[in-house]
Image (cartoon, rainbow, N blue to C red):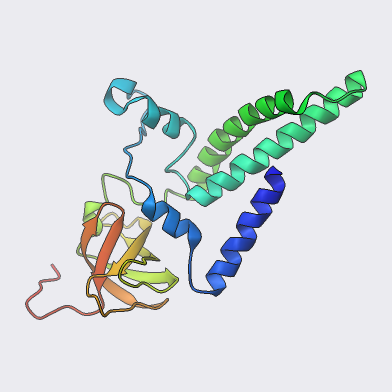
Length: 207
């Protein structure tokens, strides 16, 4: 079931991209903004247990869709490996519920370690809390989907340190539309959504 769900997610994302819509981007836009610990010396008193759990699971290091695929893959591989070893040793498989609980633990560890490994190979793309405000006043390029008011599209921008970030952008003006490839100027931010214009008004100072 985990493998089937993973394949279904991939197929849905591909079909949605062909239609100019990204389910994963919309899901991330709807999620609340959570501060995640990035340093091992930070304690639960500073971030809270929920944020610590998310940080342990590598949430924030990669897009949520990638982490979900890692979780489902690790769960399936752990479950199949466990049942294969049990059948080889005893001649009978474990009860599905027990095997699922063990596989869930394996999935969590896979999500943590593979997420951190991939996060080091592909530097954190999603905006970090410390540099999110820096993106306001910079240019971004729409790379996936069409940005409409209330329907953001994925864009790519660089912060002042030259790091690349992938963010959700929607037009500031109600009648504006940004197609893939459009270069826009970010003028404001509301939680995880950045608002942009395709051209600056003479009274607006890009600096």
